[in-house]
Image (cartoon, rainbow, N blue to C red; front, side, top):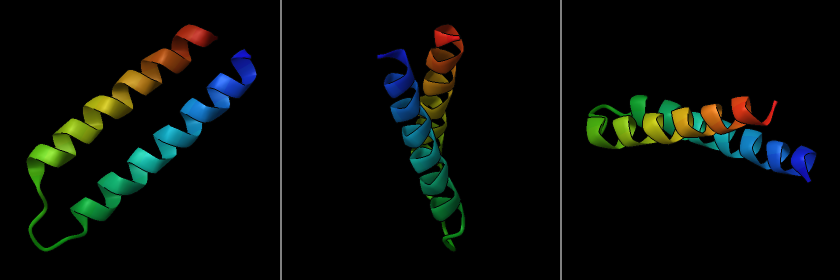
Length: 52
């Protein structure tokens, strides 16, 4: 279960990273959205670290 859970977390982390990149490439990025996404990404990174 841990392996599939970590795989799902890594996929979610990658999706959020892509969302951040996409938002930042806009002419006027929503900095509040970027900050929220970064917090989500950090929580996922911490969850992955706890699994190892």
